[in-house]
Length: 339
Ligand code: KG4
Ligand code: ZN
Image (cartoon, rainbow, N blue to C red; front, side, top):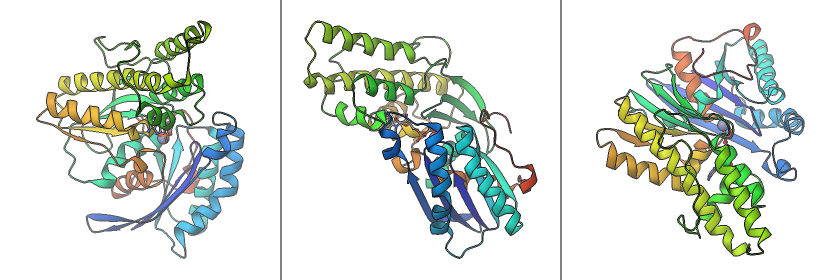
């Protein structure tokens, strides 16, 4: 079986062709067209601009991905995400499914981020705990088997990616903020400035990052008002701010993993590309959870792509969990815990 996957939920237009062979599968081609340069001029994703760019990009991306291949099924991100961006991928999938008379598999974008882990290995043991950290989501998800998701905790305000993006805006580092903060943090000390670790000791698996962002805002404002701010402080500010985010993510993930008798700890979403988070979580898992295995997809599979949608789609296709083009819909608020 060959599956075409399409992803257009935010600012990447992506397509992947996956071929299943017996129990195994192979990514035949994967294309990602990013709009980062366009949105960087505005300091963030502008939905109308994103949708227009998807419209002009989706067919060239598909042509490059497919060549002359006609797939047997189409997996497409149906939500959550920006409605006008999602519509481009979904309506393209609908038109192709109608023309080719093939089924469509609506995929939840967060489920895609989870399945980025299966892109690289197939021996992941359940129960698994997944820390999803993207631009719009920070969630701890318990997976007892394929296709089963329970929400253990989530952010009450900003997502971890938003904390990075808003922090970078305060420090004038451009968009997207995560990679910019990580780059500067590399040359700074994580102990140089003290920032709060919101909810780190709370007896639940929820997160909150808006207070941390405000702490950075006030810190920078105070430094500027007392004329002590200098560009040389940026690496220390970034390293200390990043450390506060990472500390909270790591500590709450380990606590939840202990509570739920987890076999595998997984990472997913754009912020999972962060080296500090990956190494800190790997170290803490090895130290505090010797019975379980930690895994994080390689960075290019953490940020938005269609290969993760293709693998998620394959698991649904194996269960014949698909629909006809008539039943396909965008679901901008779709929660991964609901099918
Ligand atoms: O999953 P993703 O590509 O798109 C969404 O589904 O939102 O995640 C994008 C987020 C952005 O907030 C971006 O700043 C963050 O991931 N990000 C990072 C890194 N690379 C991307 N955050 C921290 N460190 C990174 N290296
Ligand atoms: Zn994403």
